[in-house]
Image (cartoon, rainbow, N blue to C red; front, side, top):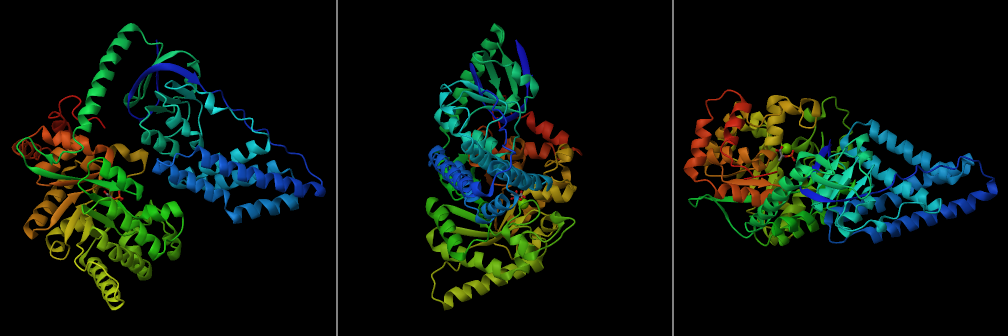
Length: 577
Ligand code: PEP
Ligand code: MG
């Protein structure tokens, strides 16, 4: 037996036979020159290849997978990008180089520029461009690609890498697992793998080539481990583990319809965080009490442009309708810093420290027109459900005052135009900076509700970049300063009798749920897939036990000790992430 380690991308255990996708040969690009008389024919061939790839993508797409639809739609947009296509045309006719060569050079240059930005999102875009235009070149060369249809059902697929447009096999071939020599945790392929619930380990490295066709492997994806030709003992151990995983999954499913409550009946609200309209359906299907955070900036990111009032209205209306009267918290644009949208270019800010710069509510207050368009869309949608609006990154009362005043102006405008809206939509704030947390007692007089964003609260309070793997071990949600702030926000909200929830990642960690519940928080918002796990966890404790847990750890001066002690309360397998 040989054991290999990689990066865990999508959890789950599998024991099956391997199918190796052969290394796709790098396209050998035709570097010859052409005669002017060949330009027209080559250009026609190129346009036909683009059309074929558009059709292929359409055929490969699964209309029931919202995430995939969105990714494939962005691929179609790239193929319809007239500016880029024109650029290729000009280069082709002026350089007299073979069309394959021109397409290859142009898309590589664009991808390299995006990768050099060092931005995760733009680097993913670079991969997408290479995927899509790589397909165009393959068509121009007569389609010498590996035929993915030949992959058998239910096997462990092993490959150097596969393209997101080939991810249809995850749906069609129902692989037991996917193992890649390369690949990252955050790219589109990783998202789709998690989406289809296929256990996956990427980044195995060169040793991945020691896995051959037909071999038997056990994949423990949560541990990122691969056992090649496992011995009998390992097979037995994993038989038991697979059985308990199945039991765990069916027990989780039984929580979908249940309300969240402790063993002794204290009720909790478990809400979903979403970034797209389609995710609202997943949230409803997973038994969410409502939407606790709709990150609207992702609507702008996926379109790569500003959305009109009507377009936004349709999106918000749809989410409210899907949730059928359950509360839906929609956050106004949190653009800038780590989440670039077309709204950023309006400010053309050249910032040295974008995380400390013109982002979120600051950006909206500096571009009132943009802010008003979103607020108008939100208020118009408010008649279709139970809407709450929240403002991100509020740091002081002045910002909240300005945001509330603009909302008031929008209501007055809609009223004078006789456009129906709900004038009583609650207006709340994200508490995600130390300044907001420590001002919670008086901000609570003006905000209708609080939602604690622990991701940014930790980032800004501890000075740790949440996206920098180099400092990731220092990102500590259990640091006593963070717990003190959360506790103060909770007391302030209680005194002012306003709603409070936590929507940062801490709210979906088992230790986080225990301490936050013990500190008096009753509403949590998280990725839809964690909702049943959170309900199951809460059902195992009495309120007294949770309160005692929060009290017992308050004397520790290190976050790691606090987390360690909370973890002791978690029996094995109570909540695997
Ligand atoms: C947070 O900061 O915790 C939060 C929920 O907002 P986002 O992750 O979108 O910044
Ligand atoms: Mg935030």
